Length: 330
Image (cartoon, rainbow, N blue to C red; front, top):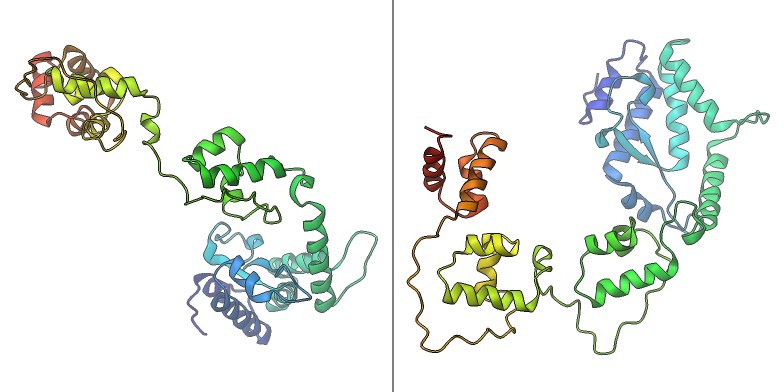
């Protein structure tokens, strides 16, 4: 008995009711061919595009059928991407691979029956007619449900054009546009959906998407607050941790503002006359920080000292000293 690279093909071979006849061998070869040909559905769609099949219609098939209850239903390795004709043949082969009147054969015969017949229309069709009908129905269905005619569509043509134009010309992220316009923005920008919609013309002096002024977490800050952060750090013996608590930012973000990584063009406030830069000592641990450290130590699962130290920009030994003085740690 042959051993295959795909584990689900190997599971098929060891089923007691499997006759391992010539139909089994044809099915195994068909699955191996499909696995080597295309690992994803879009790859096979590109290969199948032609005049008769402009959209590259294909179907996904479970190598180990779901009705066997042997696992692999949600595993991508259990999927093979086939043409409609190959899919039809695969189910016909599965029906001939197992013992007569076994539960496996009954399930597979039922699957073939669902593919080839309909209620009050007991006409059995060939694989070629089946493939032709599937391709034609797919094209008609995609045109009938294109764009705003799709009942599940959230966006409109105008919104799609506006989203793509704003994403190209404004410093906004996909997450911000999703919050504003709703779901489907990511697929729209990737042209996975709404491919038929033409984009709005870009400005003549367009030089690419503008860079972000600052990270999203700091966009609530105004120019006056930025100037105040830099002024306080220069004139008062205020640590970056205290500035972070005061302006609702982290220590790292306060450091980036002071180092002029963001808002580089913003001028600083004038310093007072006879200004002397204060001698900066180690970060002053305020009462508020101490209270927060003691509170977080009870909420965060252990080991918590390193996590708390990173959160407030202080050393783990300092955290240990605070906890010892408060009596929460020995």
